[in-house]
Length: 232
Image (cartoon, rainbow, N blue to C red):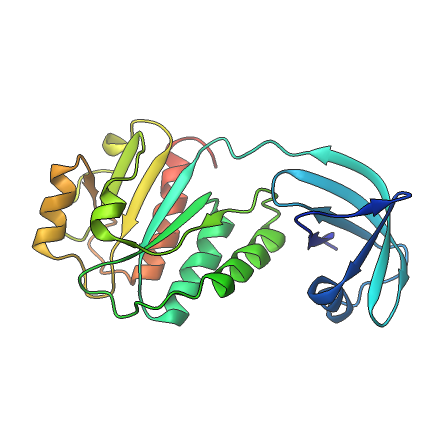
C-alpha cells in the first residue's frame, strides 16, 4: 500500500510530534488512516518527514516523526504556459501536468480563450493534491493569468509552441532547460499569435496528425519533453 502524503507548508514540530488538523486531517480520516501507519509530511520545498500515526481524534491526527530527508529539486525546469480554456478541462490539464513533472504553470488569455476568470486558490489546491498523489515533493508554482504578449516575454533556454500547423520535430527544438512550452485554446492559435511567437524565437512543434484537445496536448507535450531530455 502506498504511503499517504500530507502537505504542510510550515509544519510545527514539537517533541518529535506533528499535529495534523483542518483539511489535511479530514483527508486522513477519509483515507482511513490507522494507528502506527506510516505517513509522509512534506512542505512543498523538498523537505520530507517520515512519520507514524500516534493517535487519531475527531479534530486532529497526531504523528510521531521518525526521520527526515531532503529531496532535490527536479533535474529539469519545465514550464507549462496553458491557455485559459473551460474550467473542467483547464483543471484536468493542471492536475495531469503536475503528475508528469511540470514545475511551473503559467495560465494566459489567448485570443480564442473561452474562460477568463482566475480561480487561483482552487488551482493551487488541485496542484497540491496532484503533487501528493504523484509524490512530487516540490510543489509546482501556479501564477495569476498573463496576457499572451507577457507569456512571450518569459525567459527559457527552449521555447516551444505546440501547434497543429507549421510543426517541426520536438528533438530539434530543444536546446536545454528551462523549457517553456505553450498550449493553445480549444479553438487553436490565430495567425497573429503564431507570427508573434515566431518573431520572439519560439519553435513550432507538432504532436502528430491527430487534433488533440488542449488539455491532452498539455499532458502529452510535457511527458514528451521530459522523455527527449532523458528525464523519464
